[in-house]
Length: 313
Image (tube, rainbow, N blue to C red; front, top):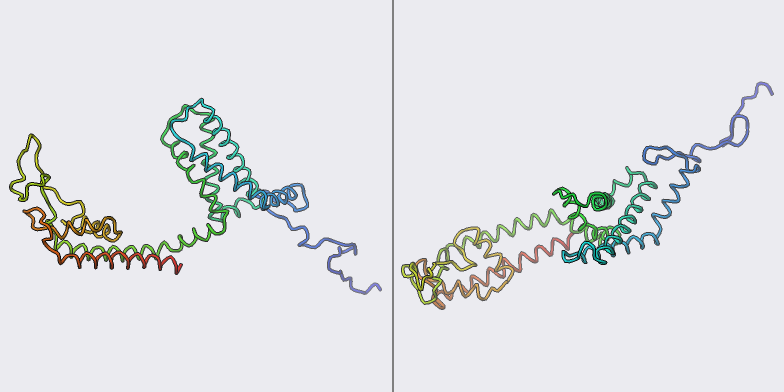
């Protein structure tokens, strides 16, 4: 009737014909261009997304990363500029860079640059791709140019193997673990430095300035070491792992903690006598206990703390 209210069903236009819902053809933004999923650009975006996320394409990129890493390992100064090896490496480098650029383009085109760059791994990929492209362009168009800034791009080529980490889940987990452990490891490092400092100060009280000897092993006293023998001057020198002042003392405790040739270092400390006399065998045998305690506490304890930090992370 004429007084009846006109109602519209969902999905119908006011004339009663089927209409399109607001969510059916939702527009998307690719970079700075707005496009419809049903348009030509939308279909290209979808095609790029399918290719970029396919397992086959991912395996191809992994293979390219391995090949690129191998070519970096083959590089050496003895390869001539016009040799077949150099030409082969240059061709492979161009192909690998093209593949990496294609991968980056597909991901940026399908996701938009804003979404793509949010991921830390994608930022690493983008940095490597851009620097590799600049390095390749310099090699092709300006091979004679020699500027220090260009050397940076060659150095950044060494980051290419890191792209392998971004694509292997277990390696990503390992990298994330190391990253999350950075702060606890730093705290543990401060604790270890404190332990090494304490032991270094204690060693300084016991052996400071005493682990010296003449460069001529036949001379025992410092006063007899200051003259010439056959035109060669004698020197009063310190043992490499010594505790004369705080910095070498901390370094020496660290060497003991790593157990690098620790028996000889311990014997050198046991043989120490005084600041003006050279070593005498088994002069202070009681220092054995102190050395062993340092190795156990500064070595095993600190190392196990570091291991525990990584396990907790």
